Length: 401
Image (cartoon, rainbow, N blue to C red; front, side, top):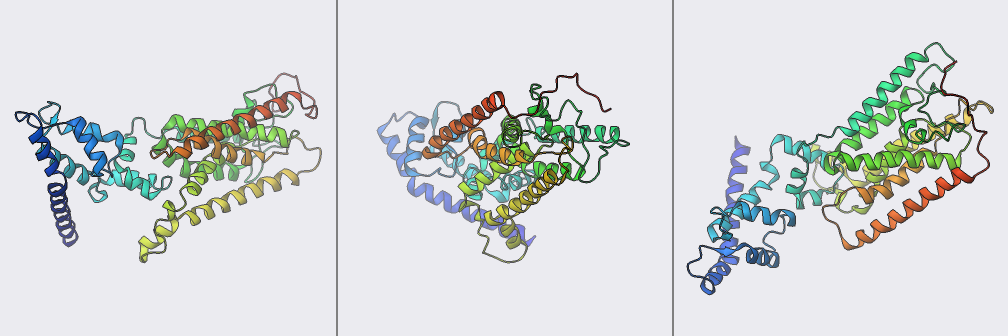
């Protein structure tokens, strides 16, 4: 009760201060415009109000995309004019609506997830935009659907391989005969450059990918919507297989690492480009909140991602070179990690929306697009012209025997 009373008192004081500020800085302008305008008019044209607000900075915390909509909402008699009482009601109500303390539990949960992929200052600056951007229409189902698909296919093959030489264990076991896996002997089956993401080598491989693509993917999808996530994820998968085909042309490729590392690459790019904003004042305060700030700070996020990526990639490299020579059906490449991460940085900067785009970011957008297209074109030509690939297998696919 005490906390509620303090917040209520603080809110009333803020509202009073805001009204005093408006009365001192904005009301005189309304009075002046009323004297020079039509004396019979009940207010001022909204176009002029917008222009004045942009000059005075009264609505700096409110996103540009929302200003006109809000003004129209508070034009109570829908005459295209706004009186000072209507304007005061607009500002006070919108500022209160943008107060984090007044958000519902669900909205706070959404913003908590959003803050893992968006700088804290950006969330505060465009709070309404982020809340409205996620409206559960549709919910973040893409990354969940992909994860379920990968789990189902893994279980199906795990059961099928149970009593074979490819039986699934913690760190081994996959179906080299599958029409989904990237097979260097059957590169003409172009769908394999994407569908290899559904095959995993052992259940730890699957778990590693699922954990990080869900932790990073769901918040990203909530902010950027499913179709942007799909672009980044699938292009990361394709970039991973293309990178593998160029650097390790004789081995198989399995796993969703290309897509998973594309999400990591997009997240790392956001952290680096917003380093100062993502510090979350991590050296201030004490107790639980201080711990949360430290966890959300840019250095800790990068450290966690680096430890995961180094461990996962190290295991993939070890498994690739620990198999005996000649065991082509047991060797699985690791270059998809690097190809996916690079695609995440390049494609993520292009495809993921930015609510506060700066002029130099538009230039960077084009630079990244050109770099990505050049790299993909090189890999495609390499696949078509390089003579060192294994001899093509033209036998009908696919049998476990």
